[in-house]
Image (cartoon, rainbow, N blue to C red; front, side, top):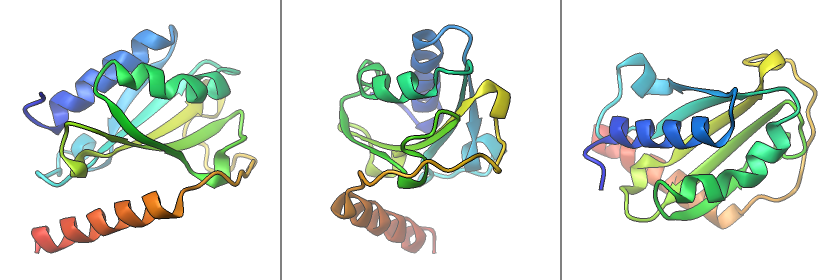
Length: 144
């Protein structure tokens, strides 16, 4: 379906930017730094207009479903109720397991501000988290 993670990341970036006018998407992490390899996940930052973070997070599954079938969407509990920031992990069907999407969603006025107020939630799948940690361990072994 996609020749590599960069093509996959580009398709996701287009879908996100198209879903919310005035937003912008940046490739970050190892792919953004140019140090990615075949085991790298896709790290993106989506900066959205102020006030749009909750709506953007709520619509994420539907928006990303246009790129590839979404198997799992998990939101980091620390920011589940934040109006300023979300950290979301998305796993897709039909693409390599290593290509999990790690998506940071930021309100424009607080983009990349690590001192935002925390708004914790409790919706977190321990089983899905354990599975993704196992995949991370496999990547480390494959990388040597």
